[in-house]
Amino acid sequence: MADQSKKQDKNIELLIIGGGAAGLTAGIYGARAKLETLIIEDELVGGQIRDAYAIENYPGFSSVGGVELAERMQRQSLEAGAVIDDLDAVVSVKLSAAEKIVETNKYRYHAKALIIAAGSKRRQLPIAEEEKFRGNGIHYCELCDGRFYEGKHIAVVGGGSAAVGAVQHLSNYAAKITLIHRSEKLRADQKSQQALMENEKVEILWNSEIKEALGNERLSGVIVENRLDGTRRQIELDGIFVYIGSVARTGIYKDYLTLDAEGNLVAGEDCKTDVEGVFVAGDVRSKRIRQLTTAVSDGTIAALMAEEYIRQR
Ligand SMILES: Cc1cc2nc3c(=O)[nH]c(=O)nc-3n(C[C@H](O)[C@H](O)[C@H](O)COP(=O)(O)OP(=O)(O)OC[C@H]3O[C@@H](n4cnc5c(N)ncnc54)[C@H](O)[C@@H]3O)c2cc1C
Image (cartoon, rainbow, N blue to C red):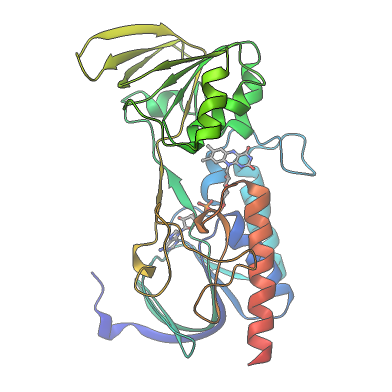
């Protein structure tokens, strides 16, 4: 742990936490507005999209690799004049209308305005083969990858509104959908549950968990265990879509900002929080639709709101 007393203090106009699509977009807008703009990222710049094999719903690109898109956004943000520190991590914050102090491993920043674009991480299917089949049979985004399963048999894992909503969308493509849920109750709203029950393509396996994924190059099936009696069965499948929650990296903000039940930060469509000068953008913002287009939209709005806030002070 770094020695707090040795941290160098730095002033900055616009500080952005997170170098994903939302943060990089905020960086482009902030720097183009001639704000001194710093993006802090502790992993690879680009965030979640780096894990996307092919993106086919981002306007302007019929199909683009996630890494390529991330690198383009990074380049554009740097060309606009933003500075990206991708070797540091934000470890604590102190937020009020009067001051926004952001501590990283190396520095203590005093920002005029702060945009939190910390994203989220989808909880991964907890099986050994997850990494092997990720993007190649195991997926986390029905809007992104659903269309690859036209006429196929797929499974959806989960029992909340994200899983039930995904089943509805995936029904546009798949011939059969097996919903695998670890309990005997769904957590989606009644209307969606009813639509699910009436959907002839859907079969539900209650009290069940995937224990193993099968296949050589591609996923070809799973072993499912019944949690009540421990019996196991093999199911042939072409793909799995997983919705077992996400992990927001928001613990450090909880004393200052409102968190929703999933740990995401509450802010309006204008990305403003209850603390003046603190904005939230992208997947970390409490909202229903999490896509690249909504992340870059938030990044745009947050940066323009931050510019307005700084200029008015
Ligand atoms: C496999 C996969 C495929 C997808 N495919 C598509 C698709 O085809 N189309 C589509 O529209 N969407 C797709 N998505 C969703 C899309 O990628 C996200 O909605 C979008 O990238 C979110 O961007 P973001 O900037 O809000 O968050 P993120 O991309 O999560 O970025 C947040 C960044 O903040 C950093 N960070 C967080 N906390 C700290 C801290 N304390 N200090 C420093 N850095 C921090 C993280 O390291 C991360 O890099 C996909 C997602 C995945 C996982």
